Amino acid sequence: MRKVSKEELISIISKEKFLYEITLDYMDLRDIDFSGVELRFVSLRNALISPHLFKPSALVACDLENVSLAGVDLSGIIIQDSNLKNTGAKIDPQKTLVCGANLESLDLSDADFTGVYLPKTNIKNTGAKINPQLIEDKDLSNCNLEGVTFISNNFTDVDIKGASLTKTNAVVDVQSVREKDISNCNLEGLDLQMFDFTNVNISGANLKNTNARIDPQKVRHKSLHNTNLEGVDLRIADFTDVILEGANLKGTGATINPQKIFRKSLKNANLEGLNLRNCDFTGVVLEGTNLRNSGIDI
Image 1 (tube, rainbow, N blue to C red):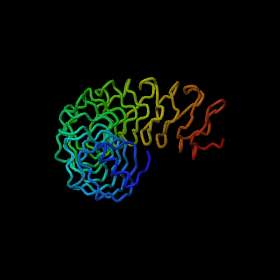
Image 2: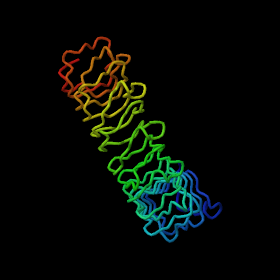
Image 3: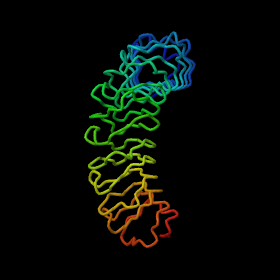
Image 4: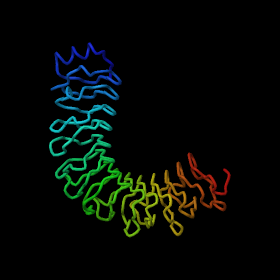
């Protein structure tokens, strides 16, 4: 992105009504009329703008975080992949393409998400109410849904890969979600103790303090790669041939034989507080491994 002066900005708008790959951060733009202007890859972070002069035709991959747009209705324009966090703007998902947008802290308490395409969208702390079965393609992948209220807990065939559902009322049957795949999903703090994780992909998932009953031998590919299991009870778990690189096993009570895990690799694993005093680490990969308070000194 290149930074332009206000004079250059006025000239560009008057000639093209199109702004592309420029930065206007922190500038005082209260006398600039953005009506009908298409903005793509434009950064306006913390800029001063007159709300009554801000009626662009499109906002694609733009950053407007902390720009005061209280009362500005952006319904009907494309805001795809744009950051509108803390702007106070009004959005109607029924009239606006919001896919990939950061709408954190906007008021979406009365919004209707029926048929709305939401992948990669951040609606954290918006007061949104979601029925997963009514979302376009049942696709919530890579969404930040923290603080959202689910008016239905039917996640059958819903794609939640990479989504954050922490601090919600979600009750997620991991056997019912699309492809039994919760990889890179943040479910921290949800109660998952009643659900079966057999053949579920939990790689990269955050299952901290979920009371999940995990059998490492039965999860997909025996993989706990980058999985956060802190606080989950793994005292009787068998880790033979299990992938543990990047896994967080702090507070699990797990008993590990490093010679039997997959490729003898504990790279980037967090084993803090486990009892490893009598373990044989010959030939074991320990790059980036946290062994604090484990009773050994390597």
